[in-house]
Image (cartoon, rainbow, N blue to C red; front, top):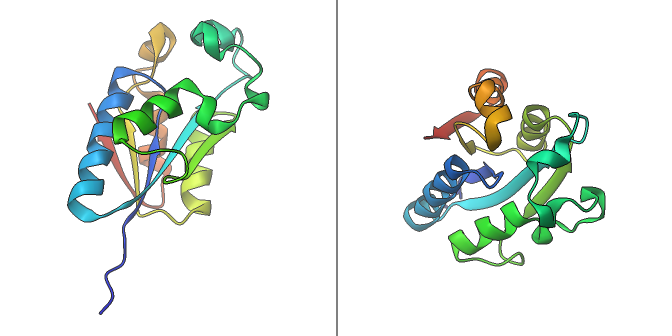
Length: 145
């Protein structure tokens, strides 16, 4: 019987919890020979969204190549992989909605993400993105603290 690789979608945003999720993804790569994909979502509909971006992220995100986004580049570095080895995606929109859509479209077995994102704005909502993903996903979700 052929062993099927587990497909894991890892949502990253550059936060400390996101970095912990990447390290958990690395463990899955080592232990289970999983197939990992990375996703980051930028929400330009949020007023002053660029206030929450690093200075080098403020160019129009629609012009960026996914491997050039700092959160994805850092994730690849932490995984010890390059963009040719792991599918990476940069989406524009509401984060939870985009994560859920990507997970369904890619037929992933697991969504792996941090419990809270970047900045004071995200702390005010106490993990609203991870909470929405957890409650609406059609697949398993692992939230890392």
